Length: 189
Image (cartoon, rainbow, N blue to C red; front, side):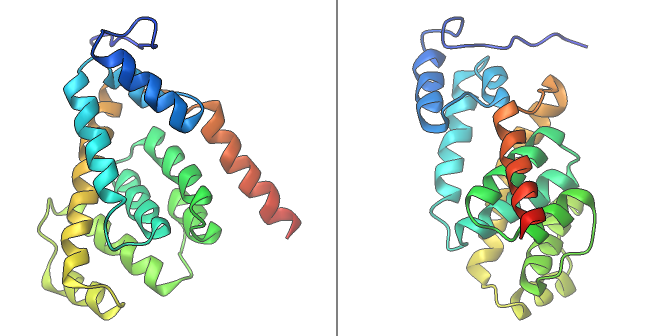
């Protein structure tokens, strides 16, 4: 297998350097995915642009993270599963939904469960969910617009999950700490 380079702002190209520096300012660290993605600055820019557009969808920030996590779980991407579990926690997604999804368990919230089922159907069937999947999604209170927004979520996760399959980044300690903090709070509640 090819050995991909893990870039830092100091080792990145002149094009990728300012992008990594901006990411570090925003997150307080550079998620390891981006350190590898810096190999291709246009790919890094595309991912960030898609990520910004996902933030502009009619899905709530919590729903965005649940859908991103659902696609990552279906694509068996460990890094993004950890990342979206952590970011979902920050965006106040249901702790039960996030944990159950990440661990392959039953999701209690019916709307969250349907968002997960629809997103994973889109991934599993390569953009061809059957009519029952679409009907169940709409019946759960989602709109036709949100069908296309889930398709965009799947697009961004296809890009990052596939890159992660090649580069195999370790989840950042900062992301793991966010999940541990959530687990600690859930145990004291």
